[in-house]
Length: 77
Image (cartoon, rainbow, N blue to C red; front, top):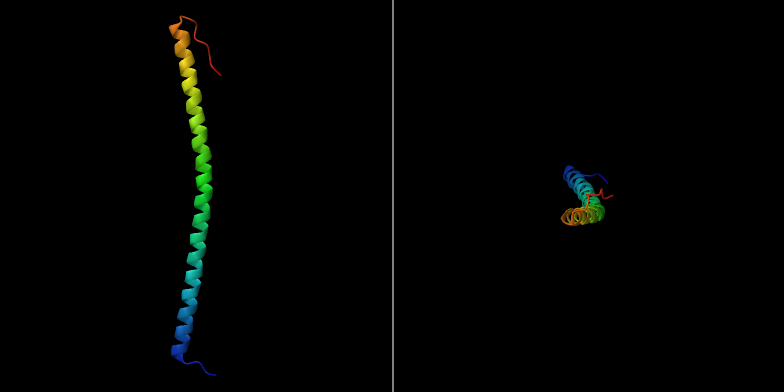
């Protein structure tokens, strides 16, 4: 069975289309997975920042209390 030039062009175009479509699907799946992982990391980072700010606010309150009472400032660790 001989293939005509038109048939070869159609098969070549279809093969290229399927290759590009498969590649694009792979890229989309990879981006979705990366976004999920990034979201988890950013949530942990946000929680750590909130804890740090809470610690700093507590330290500032203690320093203000000691200063208002006339007590010596103490280093908070």
